[in-house]
Amino acid sequence: MNRPVIITCAVTGGIHTPTMSPYLPITPAEIAEAAAGAADAGASIIHLHARNPDNGRPDYRPETFMRFLPVIRERCNAVVNISTGGGLGMTIDERLAAALHASPEMASLNMGSLNFGIFPMAGKYTSWKYDWEREFLEMTRDFIFPNTFRTIEHALKELGEAHGTRFEFECYDLGHLYNLAHFVDQGMIRPPFFIQMIYGILGGAGADPDNLMHMHNIAVKLFGDDFEWSVLAAGRHQMPFATQAAMMGGNLRVGLEDSLYIGRGELATSNAQQVNKIRSVIGELGLAVATPDQVRDRLALKGAGEVNF
Image 1 (cartoon, rainbow, N blue to C red):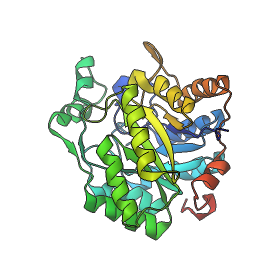
Image 2: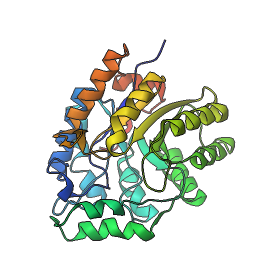
Image 3: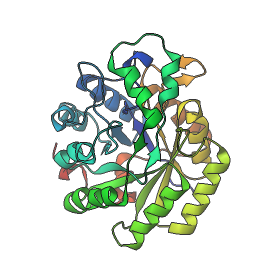
């Protein structure tokens, strides 16, 4: 029988900008409310970025995270997963700062460098709420999102070994699975581990179901039964790929980090709206949704009592 489906919700991210949606959580209070709402709707993992509350720009500062992390923990039992992807252009030390301070149960970790092109979004808008937005998008025409073997090893040691934090290993392409296998072979990553397969980012694997099937098959060849896997797809591909993952016995991620929409041309008014939609699909497939404590058991997490917030 299929195990209950793990729903991750990525509530704000570091890609979309305030001009794109009035519903994108920006302030600590908005991020906390979005996280709690998503958890109430059925998300068992909440994937978190921070934003400067004054202008919505991605923010790495631990003090910004600490304005909403304790609130989220007080309001729900969800597993808190802090991004180490940060915002495009941040250094690895900036990207790790919040997680090293908060010592969460989970953190994301990108498993390879890639061209990360979000510049096409700049052409969709003629005016901007903040001056930084257009420049932030356009700079990705000549940008490589760096995740070298050295920086991955640094994160595994400083955050994983030192804090007992386990990772959402973000794989944007086939080679990232082989990078992950390298660290497994080195004994630096031990099962059970959680692979997030990502589709639809310009520079990574395209949102083609054949890519999903192939990457899943390769993951099985590399890791056998030692891993849990999840899928996210950007933009309009979000719900179809999430549905496909559930049908294949995997897990899934939704949230306004990955798509601002709930349907064709219709902005999502909250993260909870997306969680409710995919939870309904999961139910129609005859599947159950995993609770946070089931996730803690399946991923061998250290527990909410062992974090620093």
